[in-house]
Image 1 (tube, rainbow, N blue to C red):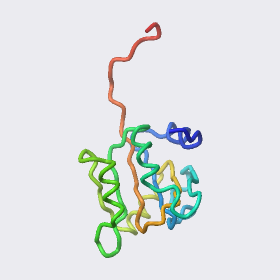
Image 2 (spheres, rainbow, N blue to C red):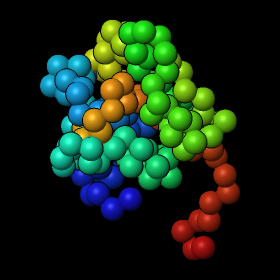
Image 3 (cartoon, rainbow, N blue to C red):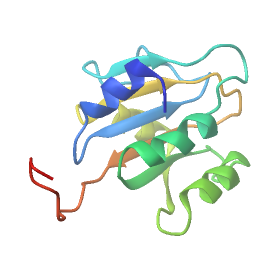
Length: 142
């Protein structure tokens, strides 16, 4: 990942923080926690997509869970297939009704909103940052 503002914002998150990957229709000004950092990657309609952001983000931070906005008709949108491929079976999508999704995204745990140009309907994901497991790390002398 090479986007410095996004890397800085991700570095400020920690276990339990949430990251919203929002489509082009999402109300970034009103349906995000007031304290969340907003990164604009919505270059034009259809560019950049949520998938384009999700793939490198999964290599940059540990993700504990993924919540997806469920359409009002209750049917999973087509875009979920791509998310499921990227996430694998270890991170199943957790559907959440649209209005509850908005309420959740206004909570203070949402530290970051990435505005994409994804023009697919209901292409919004809310990621919960996990933790880095303890391990053997070399000391200051190697």
